[in-house]
Length: 380
Ligand SMILES: Cc1cc2nc3c(=O)[nH]c(=O)nc-3n(C[C@H](O)[C@H](O)[C@H](O)COP(=O)(O)OP(=O)(O)OC[C@H]3O[C@@H](n4cnc5c(N)ncnc54)[C@H](O)[C@@H]3O)c2cc1C
Image (cartoon, rainbow, N blue to C red; front, side):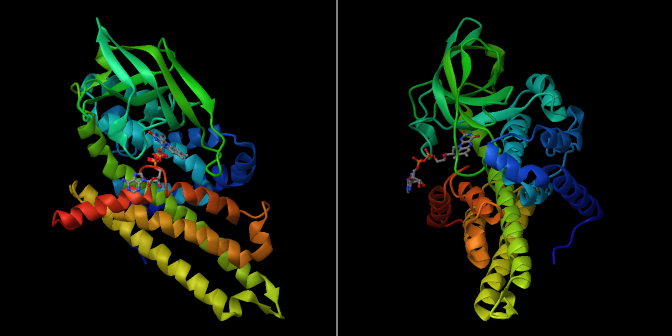
């Protein structure tokens, strides 16, 4: 149904092979043990995917959000949580620095993040500031040649394994007076808080980050003082579009597993796929999946064509997140009692999918963005 260029087809094929070889076989075990698939992560890096949207001069592949979304989809089909860690590294950290950092900062940080020598993340959320991202309380004060950071960040993907974090902190009294800093593991006063136990996405480590008089060199301020809102805005569109790729990947696996199961499972002497109520559920899943794909690809193409102010990315994230959770629930229903068991992957798909409705902006926040655009008389 979807037509790709030769390069995009090759990318899809090679990422699918990697996902089947490196991610899929370990997904269940790592979900159970809350481990991290470091070997797969390194393999993703070795394919040049860590800097998928970054410039070639830093070792990146200089591709667009469409290719990045396709990679998320294919990896997400195999192991959504390893893909979430990949997203935090490649989009929230690498793409963010590529968009917003100075040449000197890019030259210092991007090459080692793109080879995978260093792992990255982004720290915005705080215990008391989630959807209200401008309510962040972590403070940064300039003292001599350093900024001193104090505060706690919450729910940070790659927190326990990261070496380099893009961190937002308050540098003034106005709500928008937030600045962006590059913080490295080992900087005095920086430590990782407790690793958080999660319902899903369990192979993606999430933790608190604590800044206790953390000393950050002044040259690690990204851009100008109080410039974070523009940094966030520059990165948010691509974050939403590419995370929607993970939702598509999860829903695709739900459909593939449930469809095959329905053909194999006999009840009353016939495959359950011959019953119209099962057919209806599968047909709805397939239709929503392709509608989700079409929306993500359209949002990505608009972004890659230069559009920045559109709510299409928010719509893609909202639609695919809801679609993925529903696909997980539908797949469980089609498998019946087996769907509820840990030996079958669909309950994991559903648990992983639920995060898509919360992370990178909740469904409600996506609706607020879309409604605001409507109220402003703008359309996608
Ligand atoms: C596994 C995981 C990984 C994450 N990774 C990262 C990361 O790497 N970096 C990072 O910075 N953050 C990360 N986050 C944080 C994530 O972005 C936040 O959880 C999310 O933005 C929601 O914030 P909150 O959890 O504080 O919920 P809250 O903002 O407290 O929201 C609670 C509920 O209220 C609703 N709500 C809030 N405001 C409104 C409103 N105005 N109107 C209607 N409803 C509203 C929300 O939609 C939600 O349903 C991660 C979270 C998780 C769970």
